[in-house]
Image 1 (cartoon, rainbow, N blue to C red):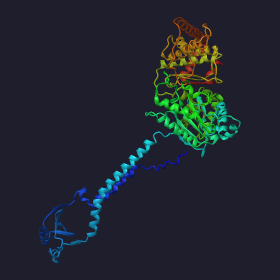
Image 2 (image 1 turned 180 degrees about the horizontal axis):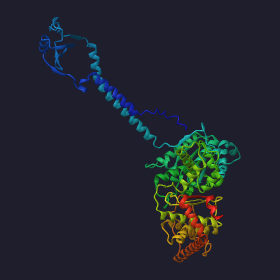
Image 3 (image 1 turned 30 degrees about the vertical axis):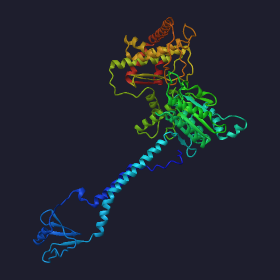
Length: 610
């Protein structure tokens, strides 16, 4: 990451630690000048007349006498007491009769006139030095905070230089159409004169549109790596602050830095945080700060000179809420849609994410790709990480096929809950339920092949039947929908056939079957109502339900729609009942095998029909 030239290098030392260390040293020196006033007096002292000391001296009761300037300090022999007295300035030890040769009490005369002056001076200066250090530190903190206040409107974008390890299109698996679109942007940045000479205008903005995890940020970095230009990265939410005008200031600063480093790329992730429609209701609102930030982005993109080699790349998964002025030509000239990867792309993505991981040579990536239909690149990377964790937990040296399949099942269905205690009746009901799903899924021509059947609890379910498509599905026919509804009702039908009653475990299957039937009637014209759309869902929102959508269907049609949905469900339930009655023996065998083995793979399951 490139650092700004005016920014000081961070040494990693806190100014508070330096301040505390200086205060500690000064205080220690001050205490050393006169330790008694802080540490207390280990020996009891008494101030007495000098005559008392001479009397004790003559009685030979003193251990020693120290004469320091005009102060006499006498230490008693038997008691932990010191007697302190003061003599006249011109008096000597002889004048005080303290040099009697018959008395062996030592008398020490210390000449400390120069030392006393220095110590007294330091003792008086150090307190002022401590106060001065505190004042200087406080002033520096105030100046630093003032500098931060002036830099409040500076851009927080991170600048990645074109030096060191770069991300290129080779690091991006799949998304071939998106890469082809972006290769032209790389050519614009590498050789702008080629286009300007002929009169072409370099695109000012590229909008990357795709679901979360499809690699929008990775593609933007790959463009910068291929073009070998600086890459400014910032999130849309980093522009917005509680103070009005700060976001617009940061936008100006960001574009100014990019122009100085041109040719360059500005990448704004989640641009919908500031680029939502202005002045409306529903998704957008009257947020003045956000609108000012958006206005500044619009004016900056309009204000680019024709020969300014700065391209704005933005990413969003909510193109339906963006302001129309932001998407018009001249600002974001190109829109690159990044689709979810198909089976071929998922295989390539899995191989890319194996870099740095110790993989077994016998890995069937195609099978994992078929198991992960609808997964984005980030989801696939998570599966490989989970597989690596599982291999490490089992003390393996390499990641094997079983680890990848275990991780895939864990991510899709949930972790196994083998410790959960389940009654025999509940296990039997689950075995019939899953066997019913599997048998119907195997017998119907448009259903996907059964991959695995298990009664081991995972996530919120007590068992699961897993089918894998031979290829990605980009469109469903009516017969495909009907077979899927019939398969979903297989568990309900099996419980009713073998146990004469059903449990609460069928609720999710019934909901999914009803949703499919409702879609056939209200969206796809696959009923007697004909080719009429009753559900106005344009699918524009990638993240969920449109909260502003209202159902505008008359009571007459609502009743007819409900009848058509009920008709589809009833017909497919009768179909499932007949299939299971005709294969009741196989249903019983599969259920009993599941009670013993708990899990059946594809080969073991298909062996019941041979």
